[in-house]
Image (cartoon, rainbow, N blue to C red; front, side):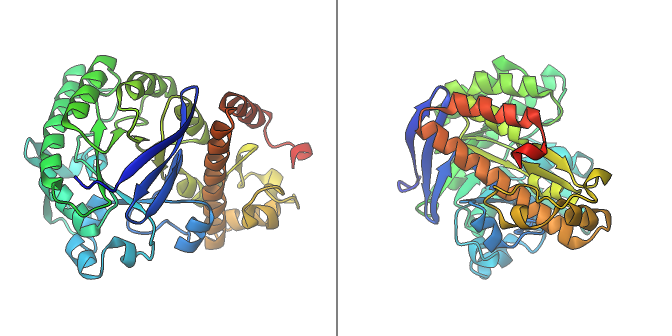
Length: 378
């Protein structure tokens, strides 16, 4: 594996960690939130605005880019960074989530998954080796192993079968990744559903295989938050302390805060842009539903103290109007505001860890969310 991908742990404060991931396309400050650009685009937000929000890295989707426009075409056009005009780090997931979400359109065996394309019905095979090949063609800085993600709750026998299949695929992915370009990394993915013993089997086996980073997958897929946090508490301490830890597909601001407290370094989720398209804003006061009629005559901005210009300068009344009128601008502004809030939260978390006051920050932030959107705090 390449030697110039690195993770530096700068500070720990309780279970929380602050550090840097170095890649060929730049440094990622951790804890980090990665905006999701499934099809090489953050929905409704220009790449320059994504970077201006404070994002160091974005995520793109192997399965969707494999289908359209095709990994080979993107490679011929200079790779994913040039294709989407994002010269900073990119992580690509492997298609494992689609193994779950598109279960009705695929078959599965030890060799991999075969999908019937949701675009044109064509049969497309995704093996561990092909998943790595696609991500190499895209030029991803962080490549994810192919795994099988299960929706919870599930039978223990199914959870164990999927976990052990994912371990077999992890070994195949590592072999396929040998000889990758310098500055890039392959992450293994811990599976095991909501069974702590199976999670530990997976974590130990992946550590024995050896990866440059480790993800915890198969959470936030139907289980209560308490179960998710319990699994993180089990798994995170079992992973190498000198490697980044990535919690896949999570989540709400509260999820991020609580997972950082349990030792997680990296996150991704569609929530900031998806909820923005539906009129929901994330702020230091908690979530605000801009479709609510009470905002129709409110001249206040969402947050006069926000570093995001859109949150400071557009009135709640205007955002309410855009949202209720289904104007595209409303979805765009709220997506930008939400991404900026997530990055602001990450920046404040990093500063609190560096200052040795993460526990206080965590309590203060939760108290502010609990107080809600009251005018005195605007």
